Image 1 (cartoon, one colour):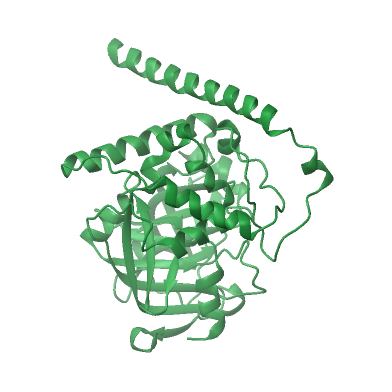
Image 2 (cartoon, rainbow over the protein chains, first blue to last red):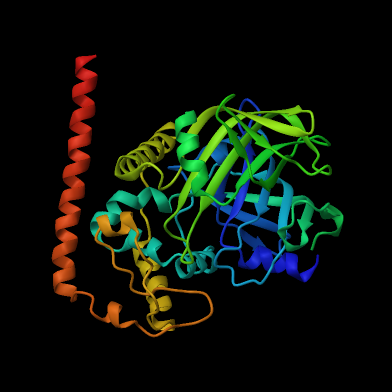
Length: 164
Length: 221
């Protein structure tokens, strides 16, 4: 993988994740992606208060992640990257931060105001559901990227066997 | 629905259009500049020739956040995509509000809806409400606070202000910054706590009022 594509995976704050609804409509929402190069896949998490993307993945594992908004990434003229992949979303509610410390630390660094969810008893009562998480693992099937985020150009691409 | 789209769409620089890949059915997204045709109430989009998106179900997402990944705004439109000569036509079918586009009412609806979803998720699986390791989470927050000197405070989070939150360890890309004179003049923690209590009380009253109004409406039906 080109280094500028890997930088996008590491530094972009959000990506636009698409899952397929029951009727086949692709549903896209911004989410926080965590690239795990040692596993060759992405980790996405969602709260059980917002479980629809996990439900969609359990019905149909085909998903995509578009990295097209470089806001706050600190990167100069990064490419836009589209990852098409296969996702799994086990039906297990995670609350422990033991195996998720690096990601949680990254979220709290990048989104400092998100710290309010745990800042006092009242917000902890209101937002406890936010910390009840479902894990979604996305294994890339195909990666396309547009240098300079120029969507008018034909994207470059790599198929899954060469991802890493 | 069309009024919502017409009101919100101009507030975003671009949109993410997602259809299905003609090759194998995976979702395929591109950034685009949709043009709202108010006569026919469709969105018109120019696609590059390479895009292998097939006609059929599609969605359009607009979203943005600031440098501190806050002040989130988003909405989604579900619909269908069809080809018409050299351009594509997105026919909106359903507007789905996301974060920050429906004011306080939307925020309360999001909060109560998410809590209800979580309760339902647990109930259907016979699970009790799990305990959250607040201590471990706050330890990570404290470590971040130690690692960083205060930088610029994220601006204008309506949710944060309503809940009386004051960021303790702001982060901005590219390293730490000195406090500005304006930030140094922020209220002391004592007056801040008082303000927090007042806004929290108002927030609780607001939620209670909404719940009572909803119950009353249901009773009338």
